[in-house]
Amino acid sequence: MKAGVVHARGDIRYEDIEKPQPKPGEVLIKVKYTGICGSDIPRVNADAAHYYPIVLGHEFSGTVEEVGRGVESLKAGDRVAGIPLEPCMECDDCRRGDFSLCRHYAFIGSRIFGSFAEYVCVPEANALKIDDDVSFEQGALFEPATIALHGLERVPYYGGRTVAIVGAGTIGLLTLQFAKIFGASKVAAFDIDDDRLEDARKLGADDGINTLSADCLDRAMSITDGKGFDYVYGTSGAVPTIKMPLVLAANRACVCYIGTPTGDVDFSIDEWEQINRKEITLTGSWMSYSAPFPGHEWTTVAHFFTTNQLKHDGVVHKTYPLSQIADAFEAFKHCGEVKGKILIDSEA
Image (tube, rainbow, N blue to C red; front, side):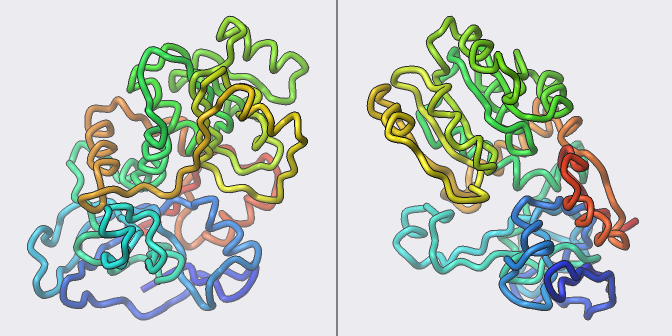
């Protein structure tokens, strides 16, 4: 089969590799789409890959081609979304149902060969059957959508309150939509890219504010009558955006960091003291799983894609054929060129 194989830093090749065969308890998936995750970029364009050669790709959809011995819940022809985490199921975290926190996990597309290929083999539990009403493009967005929902729920979220989304990338736009679905009174998106802010408005944001504008904070406070936001979600890992949630937060607000930092962050005493003075509830969010595995995050995403309340228009920026996967990663080297999710089409 054909695959996009990473051989070294900046060296991803479209080439032939052996097609996998399903072992007992596994399914072979004919891949349709795979999204390029932000974590994939340093694994290709920098030195973050666990080993070489490696086939990355963990946000994927496709059709079951073949099932291994003992598989009962899936059959050839089923349309599925991929679930990349393989928790150990034996540690204390797994026994509590906190699969995202497992320290002995495997992960399809980073530690195990993934879906930047024509086919991928996964355990039966790692393929979620999707309805015919859910497109394969949406299927490839299940994993980032579940990350957004998991992050939203890392704090006691209630409708009727104000929400700020710092970062209007893929996770930000999906978090925004869930905030609206679950009843936010007002949602504001913050980013440095006006095109992404326009996408945020189309997807339901009451305002999109460029964080480089001189009146950024004044506009933000005007939305909340000067009180600040009840919930603030940091969905960008860019260092300048790490401090902003604490500034935007209201007294007794909840702040959740979903994005992974891209560098070290230094806080002044005054900046950090806002947590104390405002009595902010501060937490992080990691991946997207709960009990029973893979968790309600995945079934909830399936529901809202099926009802079309969760939308992918404006989230997906461009699609490349698998044969041009090197060009897709090259695009990330040019600042401002990529303005949303890039999908790789394994059948093109």
